[in-house]
Length: 92
Image 1 (spheres, rainbow, N blue to C red):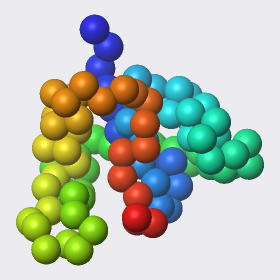
Image 2: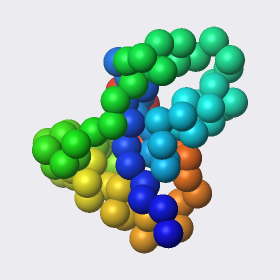
Image 3: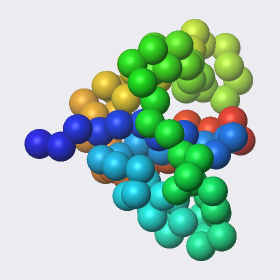
Image 4: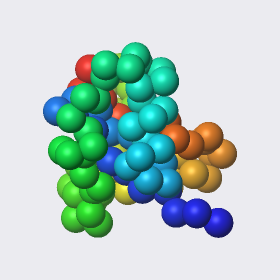
């Protein structure tokens, strides 16, 4: 079984998948070939500290308490999410 990791591809988007390369490829497939143009050199895997520190709201109104990226990833894996996928964005 492979390990799913979270990668920051640009200033707005984080993708989850087995590797930076598969996340970039899927991101470009879904968003267009010109997306994430600097991701090969600037994309980074989040470390454990980043996964605990960064938070995500799961509701649009931001009324519910945010959860950590680590919690969100665990929930996505447990829920059977297909990876690679867009994991979080400041744009939605």
